[in-house]
Each structure stands twice: as C-alpha cells, then as structure tokens.
Amino acid sequence: MIEEKRLYPVTILPAATKNAVQALTSRDIILADEIAAIDETLFLGISGLDRQTAVIIKREADELTNRNAIVSPNP
Image (cartoon, rainbow, N blue to C red):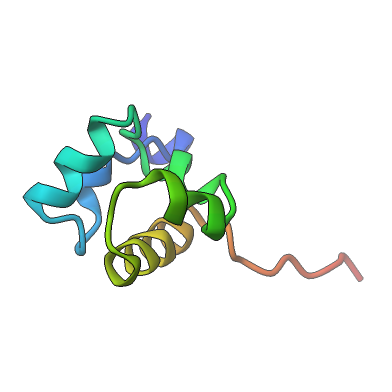
C-alpha cells in the first residue's frame, strides 16, 4: 500500500539526516509526497533546512514520487 499510494516517509530519503528529519517533522512534513507537492522556493522557506540540504531533499522527493517525470502523450 505504501508503494501503491507513494506514501514514503521522509526518513527514506538518503539526504534526510537525523537533524533534517527533526526539522521537517517539527513542521509537520512527514511524507516525501508532501515535499514533492510544493514548489522548491516554498519548500526552501518552510523546511527549516539549509539551502543545499533542502534542494537535495526536494530533488530526492521529486524523483521518488515521480513528480518530475515527463509524461509522453499517447500516440
């Protein structure tokens, strides 16, 4: 069910150190999809993380949830 619904916790992200996870969960961000669903600039502002870590975590969340996948039209 976790994979089907893509309900991955932020702890699954490789760049999510203990401190990063604490910062995110203190802001009620617990799922990678929550990160992927918002704009990078907004995430940088609300994450409580340094810019480099936030950018990496955002990219990992996007990739994990396929938010950045390009959908090709049906022929």
